[in-house]
Length: 96
Length: 94
Image 1 (cartoon, each protein chain N blue to C red):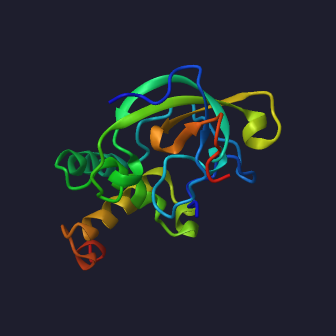
Image 2: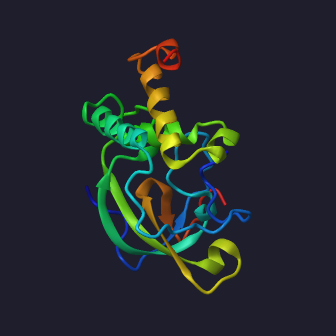
């Protein structure tokens, strides 16, 4: 399937807070980072954990500045994130 | 609504200890749990995401007090009951 994002794109993670299984860690929700690379396509874990059929979708490695996630720190943090949990960083912000 | 597994960015936990020449398993039962889980995944009894979910659904106090393979054992037995493969009585009855 066509990918919405490419390496170098700035993305914002969604602010989902579900009670079910979710691979987007709490500390990385609603944060802005940069796509490093595409990791391939996988079924959304949120769905397959609940037995919900899902088509594979792109998963990206996204790099965040520690400052963005924790308010301080000079290191970077990389997280693999499903496309469902990402939106373009520019333009209309999501639930924020 | 995050669950007890989602501790990234939290303080209060001790540093991770790196054991020198760490063996794959610290007891035979751990190897059995590992093999059982691989077999059940391979047979399609449940998928990897359901397995992770079952670990995350552990009561927080039990999760924090459990070792790595104790969490695996909890998830395997939870899913065997939920999938109707075993009854809770069969599992806990020994």
